[in-house]
Image (tube, rainbow, N blue to C red):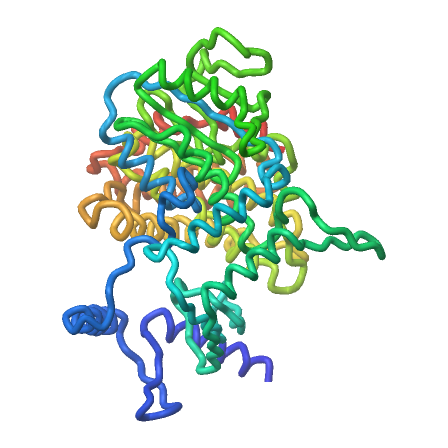
Length: 491
């Protein structure tokens, strides 16, 4: 029975790897298998036809930018904003990084509701009626088939099931719900109930959006000029300008606070790359470094390149950010989690060769793979049974192949097409093996057979890559043969 279940799971994975599987109204439950390239062609053809018949229209923005000000919803938006800014800049720039103090707790409820109400009274932004659709989706998450009840509309790689629930609501109804959300948040502590009278709840599904609406309205008091950029992820804000005067004016306004919005900043978290003449207590002036850390990203203040920020791991133990499987499938789980970790880190911010120099792209990829090697040593410590070195060596080499597929896909689909793929599979595999050798050499007695296998693979790659424009010697010069300094601080 177990074998048949496992076989069924593998069949689903195999089918969804090569085909788009769907059903039709005409044939009810009969499944149809389309090659993914064929389905993509049908998808584009149908979309074009719907546009021609004016059945659908393109929505350019899910959220009107002026509603949320400088807010960015994740690294994708940060990447697009920063790249469009960075490729146009050539002169010295002035940076001001700030952190809003208690950004959720200090929100004035009445002011927030007035902002929301004004937005809802704008017919260009909010329509009179809404249709809320909820549906069941079946999704493959790391080889595990899961059933979810969902309200999102940006899903992919899923099978929709016809269990759709719809409800139609008015603008007034939605505004009433938001009023209740803002003014009547009930908190239970022990057996006692409390009503929140200041600020908004932080854990709500719309808290971030409401917070961004509030501070977006506040940011209207400091409009951005041409050649400047302002970005904010919830409470972490960054302002960059070619004008020192504008930078100081922004800094001065942030330091003084904005009473109308009950706004103040954490002065101990303010960073600039220029000297300020007043309110300097607790302020960090970045004089001996070119890099500024913001929201998990390192930004070069001179070249505007981006790099991986590992400071998160300096103040806590790496193992605390990981979970472990001690079952008989622990090795498979380890492999799946390593693959997932590098996929999440392989973002266009770090691998775009139009934004970053080739050396920085290589260093970023090397850091991602080296961080996975750190996680690898932690996972292997927690394996219920010690896997043989051939299995471990196989995981590492597969990791290199997988990273290239993620890198290749990101460059082609998110950056600048197939002509933007600079590094070959050999380059990525060499960086992966080199990163693991550097880390595992620190535990040589434990991983001696694995390192020996990796060294043999590296010798073969060195022979194959001699004719490439990036030789193994060049890659070694860029990455070095010792752990980078920041990795020595990872516990």
